[in-house]
Image (cartoon, rainbow, N blue to C red):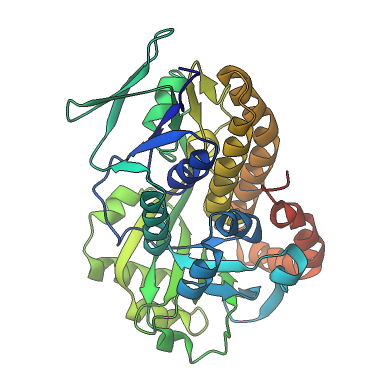
Length: 398
């Protein structure tokens, strides 16, 4: 096997999987990607690629396209639910960190990455739900899929997200995704809905006495190019229960929850269509990220809740660093150990930060919300400085 290009089986065609395949190709390693879901361009809501993730997008030649199809976020601005400004962070990102932060529709990002992988001669297969991995000594590693087919390779990368099936194979008795007790609602509205407020190209976020609301531009499309999201305490209902409701009932719930919040939040809720509902999950520290010839990357290894805006960027970093380590052509187990030793401290620090940030979005008393808002105003400059380590990281030079 060592005398021919090695072949990677990659489980998951979200973010980490296609980028890993593109970069492994440069290291002389063939890849085939297997995705559980059918191919779709309309999946998910909006997200942000931070400067550290944009360095990887630049490496694979997609930074310019992402900026043109997304929207540069010039700052993150914070407000109280009455509309009082609490402060601003993440200004001048491109100047300070070499790349901007860019908002984008998840479906657009996935389309770009899958198309780039195809152009790099990566094989992609959809409707391939992994059920088992067989790894026996000197034989090829075998992935078994729910449709009865199999695939063989020299090693396997689990890039299949927070609900990773690969994780259950690598760490059979490991932690399950942890529900942080917050429900996420989100979707898209026309640009015009935000025009009543001079947002520019900033992301505006609001802390309520209970919950959180954010919005900003995410594409040049005036019809559907602004993203919004609402984070709320679960109060005994999980995302599946909300997803069982019709759209009008969901909208009525949002109207009630955000009643009295500042403009343009009521207008955004009225304009919302195709509301997406998700549980807010992360995964406790895994005892290991690899087993024999299988390795976990991205959310499969270190799923983070969205409250630090780093899930996608960490996945991009993982793909870059793994490909660079594979170029060294060490023994596979040594490469996997080196990858985990390098990536684990950074990933777990950000997972913990995201969980702490989420605690600011839970239900508080009126006095508690007032104190929190005052703390945000006083401590925001210091807190912003403490987050620079996330954005200053460049996976190409690490």
